[in-house]
Each structure stands twice: as C-alpha cells, then as structure tokens.
Length: 264
Image (cartoon, rainbow, N blue to C red; front, side, top):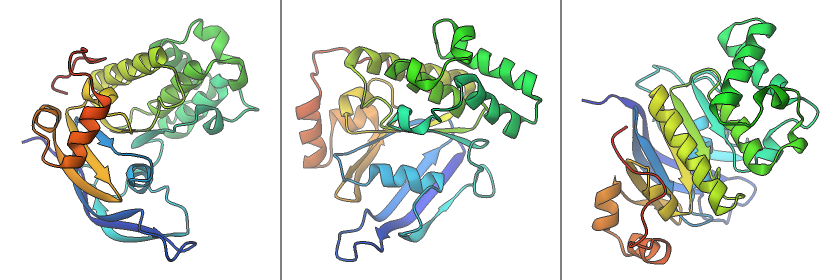
C-alpha cells in the first residue's frame, strides 16, 4: 500500500478581517498520497490556493483555522524549504530583486543541506542546468529582472527542489506565462517529480493543463471539495455537474494532452 504523505481532516479557513464573508475553505477532507501528482482544480475564489497555503503553513495571522492536517510521512509538521518546496504564481514577486539567482538558490542549499558556500553555489549551478536555464554559468550571476518570466519560474522551481524535499507545492505556476512556456513548465515539473520521487500538489484553474500529467484530480467549488478521483475517472465519468462543466469548457477531447499521464 502506498503510504500517506498528509491527511487533511475537516479543514475550514476563514478570515477575521471579513466576518460576514463566506469561508475560504469549508470542511475539507483530502488525503495526499506519497509519490502522486495531485491537481487541485477550481475557479478563482474556490479555495484551492488557500488549501496550498494551509498545507504549507503559510496562512496569514488573520486566518481562523479549524480541522487538522496530519503528516504520517514526517511524524510532525514539515519544515519549509527542507521537507517541502513551494513555487508561487508570481515568480517575479517571490524572488529577491537585489540578490543574484545563484545567491538565492545557494542560500537554500547552505541552510538546509548544511554545506559551505562554495558547495552551495555548485548545487545552484547544477539545478539551473537541470531546470534547463540557458547558460547556467551566466545565470548564476544574473538578477531576476534580467531573466524572462519563464526563466524566473524555472529559478523558483530550482530553489524549491534544492533541498530535495518530499513534497513540491506549485500554486498556479503557469498562469502568467504563454501557452508554449506553460507546456514547458508543466513538462519540467512532471519530469522532476518523477526523477526525484517527489509528491506534487499542483494548483490550477485549468483542468486541461492538469489532465495531461496528474494522477488524481480534486475539484473545488465555493470553498468545498466537490469531487476527487483518478484523472481518468474524473474526466470520463464526472460525478458532479460542476466538474462536467469544467471539462466541457476547458478540454478539447480531440486534442492530445500536453504531457502523457502515467503512474508516478
């Protein structure tokens, strides 16, 4: 039996700043299985990004949280950067503009791998090459504004996997990119999690994008989890009208997926 990485039980999140607003998450029960690629699908405001922040322990102080998240694979709450990596939607905002790309990745290696600065820079170069940054030696000394949007997102991915985490959380990592770069980033994420045996939690509003590589899909609507199942079953036999509408509006069933789905 494949071990559980995390178990989410009765998770609800609301915010003190807006007492009259509907909750951001409402009673979510969801297991995250070690080694799987799990896509969280839903429209803007459905709660999917709040789920990612809750899993990562990054909710703001204004959040009121009920329920629990257990981590059988760790036995404790995971350590950011070491046990899980996080790729944010806006790569430009998540990178420090006054530090070079090499410094930012090496900092992760130095802190979480316990290596010296010289070895940390070697790790940074290795990762830039692995995420297919052109001329990784030049990129080490570049600042974020000197890179394209797709390259900045690759740098964020490199930093997120630097400490060899078990879990990679990617929150709408392709939404600011054009379709060609989207496909490249999704293919890269798929390749990395397969090679390193990581679990991927992929947040997106685009069910077509996720359908090509996710093992399982969880559909969120109005702060609730309305459906979860294998990608094949969810696409072929949606249990909820909302899921069927997402499929009808976003998937051309005559077009091959961006990435071939398969076992993790």
